[in-house]
Image (cartoon, rainbow, N blue to C red; front, side, top):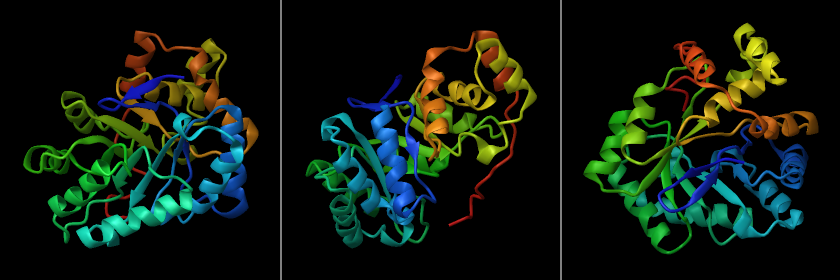
Length: 268
């Protein structure tokens, strides 16, 4: 397993994404993943599955200190008076005293960013969030968080895959010691039949999807959180650490990136 540095903490470069997983399907998938060796689980208030993840984690027997759990606060709870109670509710569902990373799920122009970050910093100071960050933030919004509000933001979780060039965000994050977590890392299945990925995968004895994930985690400061439920896909995703892409392959894949976005920026 590779790790991404978070200004003093370490986040496993591969995690399990759980958006649109619910009920027994979610609980079973998370427990299966933990039994296989996954230690990074990503969830959110809005996903409605924190309780299932909490049950799965508790039943797994994996020590809490060995897990990296991320959750996010939704846009209707970003006022200072709501941030604390929302986080506390998440902690209760997750059956934990703290989360490793607490994110603003999506920017909300009607709530001052400094108000939200101030409340999140109090949670960090209280030990209820080991680190704080953002999701779906632009370079300008990242800059506001860091320079205007002096917030210790360590990560921006964004849609990132081979079909979507996110170079401005990556460059800004790298310059300021921030990590990037890629959601939708396989572009919702649009990459599994890609000929370039398949060709490179054949050379390494890997699938197109494994090459696409390896391209992400091989970049400095980048983690990926693919969603999977079945044993075969969960295991295949874990097996991206048994090979490496060479410089020529990385550059060829870098040239593939385009402007295909799966999640519209105005989705929320």
